[in-house]
Image (cartoon, rainbow, N blue to C red; front, side, top):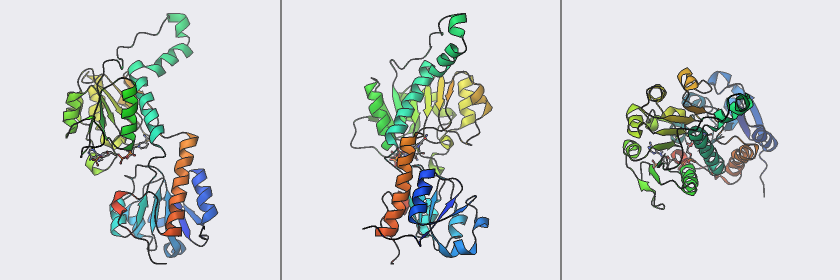
Length: 326
Ligand code: NAP
């Protein structure tokens, strides 16, 4: 049985995936504001908003401006832009969209890795610019996947899906997490530096936030070494971008493939100018198929919460939050 939630007010700050907005609007009373800023919260919203559906940052002040708030349904598995700790303290549930994007992001990670070591986008430009005809074959690539040893920073859902693909490509896999994953036999390194020393291909798919801020720093890049390839499909904040640009320029590492950046959509000029980078505009999960599945999970979390009092995919910081008695 589906409950009637048409009187439950859900606030959508800023942009939201069209399918998610359509589903929220169909099942709830949806209201919108331009940005997740307390100054946009009207008295009506303060008195009525019980849920948020968002793909934007939600800070403590915005949570505090909505005293009736029960749940924040975040569009995306990464929720570092939502103050989930504060939400947990205030008894507000936070949900994200895990699993439904795992395979898509892992596919993108492997594409980005291949683009980086085999220079496929540059080779395509060579063809399109007529240089194949004018200048002959595209130069042989100095880098290859052959003989590489891969290390994954963040062996979670997506990390495991990347590891499976790397195995199929014939690469040995090691990883770093804060804790060992008992269910897999990949080589574990208790420190990121130790992992970087052991491999020449580092793939970061760790979450953003204070604990991973600039974790991939000059020391880690130096440990990766002159044949090193760094791929980031996790969060830009995990990398010291100035140190990365320097390492790419002075030969500390060989190449980098980046889908995510610290200050999106702005990409540091040094990374744009570097001849040994392959860059993507945060497209890890960006297919119609996968974004629609994420949109459904945002709506399904709200429907489940206001129907049965249980979220489908709560984040750990708010797993303890119970629904209010209705
Ligand atoms: P997940 O299953 O939670 O995996 C995260 C992994 O990172 C866990 O294994 C965790 O292990 C490890 N980790 C967390 N904090 C760490 C720390 N401080 N030091 C070392 N390891 C740490 O998440 P997921 O579903 O795989 O997603 C991972 C991330 O990918 C998301 O948070 C998001 O930022 C990013 N992402 C990017 C895109 C894109 O479009 N580029 C798309 C989707 C997701 P421990 O807890 O044992 O440390």
